[in-house]
Length: 632
Image (tube, rainbow, N blue to C red; front, side, top):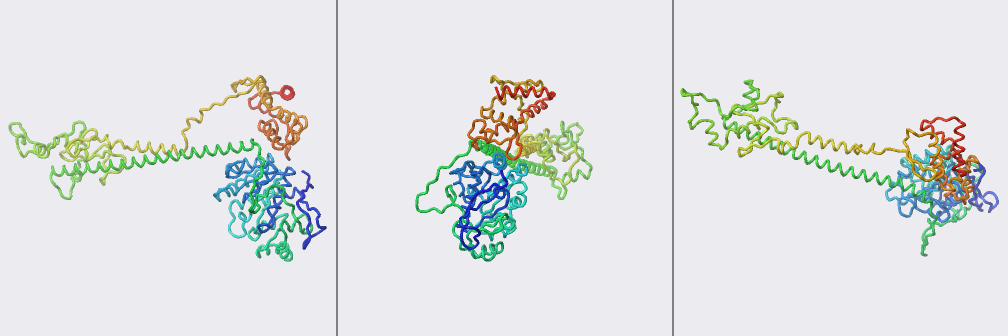
């Protein structure tokens, strides 16, 4: 690109502020447009969007890159004449995108010089639209620092992002950053607004070129008076459609100009009564769309996986809640059984107001647990008479017989009730109802009672229920296992498949046969054959482009494509060029030029496999590859 290259956009018009001969063409320097800061303003219908479209058309005619931020969906008419990527959120766009596509869009714009319309109007959610613009602007700025490629960012209704009053959001701060620091990296910005009074004055005053179309609101004309002078503030109200005052850093005087009419379909024109006819629009390369669609597919897959994890988490949480309810029911049942047994014990031993049986035993130091295997008898101690018989035998008032007959309980059943009085079948989930915990391995047993084996709990009718039944089903281990499974699920999928894929080295031999070799046994000849196969598998035109780079040195994809028999179409040229670049056969050399790197690629592949060769041998290998794959 020549530093003096210009585009003609308007002609001088008569009237106040006119300088020079009327009808003289007015041109703008391309470098200043692409890398500088511009501002175009005017009320609705004054021609500001037409002027911006004329600038865009002239840049596209000369093959220069730009990205248009379309707030109202009025720039798609450019596709009537130009292959420009229309990205947004609805089906009218070439591709539906989100913030995930930002980095790829920046790569297409700066690396492949693809012009782009970012249609913000197609997003129903304003926050999503702003997030997309913020991500794209950030990616452009980051990539421009490396590319150093002149590029223009054209932003409609810039006052919505850089307001004079109110806070500036993340998107506005990114645009201001481009305005302040983008020039040194080759990234320019042009803001368009119908309300200059609402645009941050720091942005306007730092612009290299400004175009003032018709303004009538008093607050807006005051801005004209402050930046130009009061005479221009009065005259700006009487400008015709498309007419404006052009103020630039590279011209000594302010010019009154009449901008040309745009050549493409005016999608922003106010609709009339006649039928609307949408023009036939040019389509972009399928390769460009497919690359962006891959990102969309990956995003959808991630969203589906996240949704599945959320559903799994909901199921786990529901199961945990169910287990907790059943656990509480089991605890309640245990307490009821204990209270029932205490009542029976009190009835047998007699009421002792103010003192429980356990308190009496603690005072007496009786804390040793009974033998759980044999257990003491439930009958009280008896004395023998002179005949060796029990003093209670045959006595109708005897304890064992009276209790057994009068209450319908036998000895074994009562042992089970005594056991449940001192043992919580849900031990480990919560604290005991007693104020004082007994030492481990010891338990309290009421006088005249014994523990039931295997944790039996007495039932109301005198039967025994095993504590390892319903209650033990909800043990601490069960709940902890459920909690742990939720934790594992929330932190990510099981890593079973992380090491499931083993890579192997594959290549296509010259005869088209697929081969697979172990990476440990590669030798130099095999690496050479692989590289031959890589190059030999390319399309004829692509190989001829590679040969052109080898013979000519750093060149542009357009020249390489033309020399290979192509028609020099930018889209086709960069599509073939991308196949060479992604395989490492060429590399970017700066300023849109690419250079041949097959020798470096071969050396790199040999080194990756631990194979060292001298320079002469390397040259022989390279010559063999070039003779066979490029000229063969």
